[in-house]
Image (cartoon, rainbow, N blue to C red; front, side):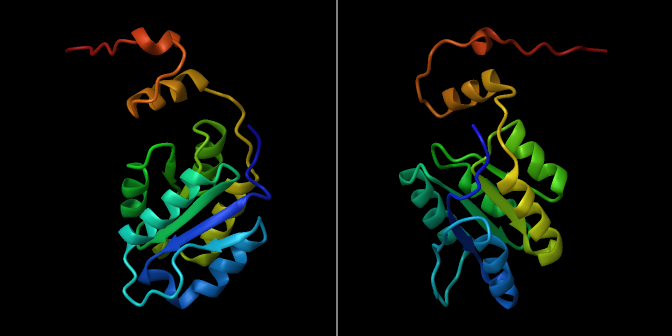
Length: 165
């Protein structure tokens, strides 16, 4: 529990933020030790970036990741395929706050099309917002989807009931 402030931050991106790469690095660096997981790869692709960042975060418990592509959707979908990665595509400050307080997200996915100003606010909120332990039963159930055995949870017997007209 707690905020992500002061942790190592692995950063991955694609060609869409090349023109604003320096401001993005500065916006992230104020929150912890920035590790640019991509480097200066001329053939930058969002899937390669997502893989580099997610595998780094998987092996470094004192870290989290920030991924940015055109819409943030591709990065989010790819990142959520990695065990132990909980990626949230955040399009607003409120999304960032809820991704942390409710879902304990450890990977922030941003849309370059939203611009550096909004994305800086989203980054600030995501990093400074603490996970509160809210909905921990649901998060335990999500980890079961990954095939990671955990202690029994009351949600194990949760049934979805659908109303019909």
